[in-house]
Length: 334
Image (cartoon, rainbow, N blue to C red; front, side):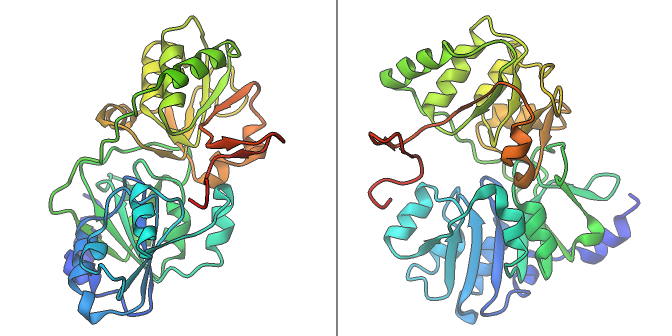
């Protein structure tokens, strides 16, 4: 391999990587299902040596080891851009802070933030010296470029997700490399089973769909139900420009409903910024040129989205008042 010597020079253990972190540091620890495991565990082992280490991540997919070993939050302070069920449980115990964010503006926001150390999960290096951010392009290019010290944690089981842009980082931009001790498969998140209400709403939405629609689907059972109905319908030539790629997009594509042929930009491509689902989705994404991951400043930019005609966005909401105001993020302070 052309980069073998540089790779060997930068290769260290997770425990050595954890030594990079100092008290008072801001540490980035991945996003969504791409969270580091070995570096997390190694940092947890240093608990008694550290104070006021502020950890930043996105949508905590499982409880990090640094939280398990520090149940009072005396050494590590967790901060999450978008709360998951795990984040909410930690918040209830005063162990995690929510960071308000207009997601598509994250790139400019990171210019103002401190990132002392980044533990960034990646795929195996390719022949050209690039590590891929896999299913979590999102804000990865912002946090890694801002990091004073960048450690990549290599998981050879993670799918290589093609771009787009900003989906990879070159070895020359990496300070240290840690190889996963277990190369775990990405966390599988099955779709929630739809309720009768979900099914009725989905059926009403289907009446508004036409050939050539450019789709965005959010998280939850109802958007996935729409995807299932589309895969069983007569619709054709659908496009995709979505924040989150989910399993139902695979069903629609394999049913021949998605071609992207009528899109004005990124024609023929399923555009997304992160993916969460089951192994079916992750296998579909691996080296698949029909899928294009982009940083969120592109994917979620209203001016980019508006360049496609007939965009239909389908998302869950928690509450709607009589003025037509929609609450989709929080209800009663949660």
